[in-house]
Image 1 (cartoon, rainbow, N blue to C red):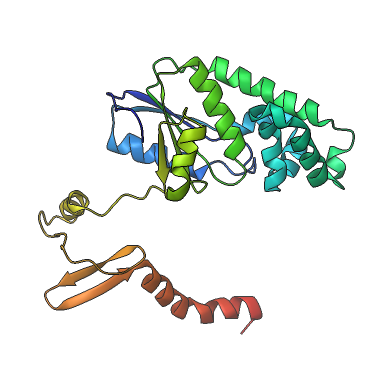
Image 2 (tube, rainbow, N blue to C red):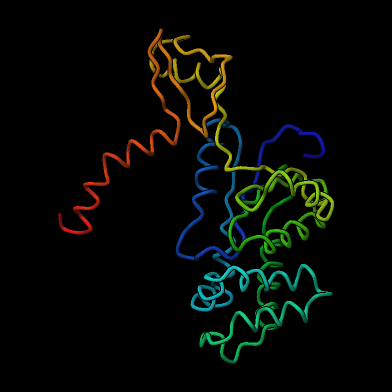
Length: 261
């Protein structure tokens, strides 16, 4: 993370190409719902930008690109690294080989359509009073997100840019900050709310028992979830335990549905 936070009144959330166009970004929807519920005065705008790209290049063609990650990263890869255009084009041609939807399509024409609609999106979006812009970056979205971040930051250098999603990990963050200084903050992980005493106080109030839950200083080796203790009785709510119990309960029922038993 770089820079210092300032009072925030308006922010944008962006989902770049190339997710499947018929699946709206659940990441943006969930995050917007959470932010507006926690910060009622905050104006949050979601931009499912990849739908504009799908319309510009054609939905059938967009679908074919989005189904293969290497193919998806080539279009904005050529825009992001113009000095590597020829190598990127060869990768595109290799990955697109045999797909009838690309017959007669020039790589440069596809890249130009993506560039033009991206430029229009950037110019038509009101970024001026937007203090923070967040990018959800998952499968097939890396080069498109980086290109968008770089172009937006060129025009609005004071904007705080946050990137998160499954494409990021702790070990690679220093390299990302070095090569793409336009990124101010990287959120590693899926952004779950941490279990702390404030969360427990909120849950206690919802249950009508203020102060009923306390966070123990004891730590257990579990991969997510929690352990609820009352006196000498413990309830294991670790995620692996919950999934194992669910599997034991449901596997017979599922087998009956699949195999008619």
